Length: 140
Image (cartoon, rainbow, N blue to C red; front, side, top):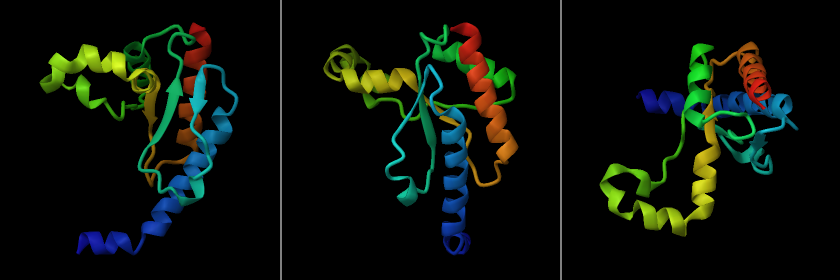
């Protein structure tokens, strides 16, 4: 019943997320050290996540430290998705797979999922983008 009720509002949910992503894109466009994925399919995407790629070396930080700094600013960020061969059960394969999958490693080392949910306010998106810019600029 809950799922059916949510399905009736799916377009409303997707439209809200698209608007928030549009704002993220506008506020982060051209920012050194932060790369956005193409907007080519934005009109068809419901945006379960909004992932950016950050050049942590450019920002003078590791991803772990960068995320800690965001957390200190009350901004939650996560890493989606960890390559399968990085999971503990596959540890014996990690070295070989890391070597065989350089593009996966490049993506994984820079990916950061920003806050994105239906009730997120425009002011909160602006606070996230300003904080990202400041953290990247102060360490560059």
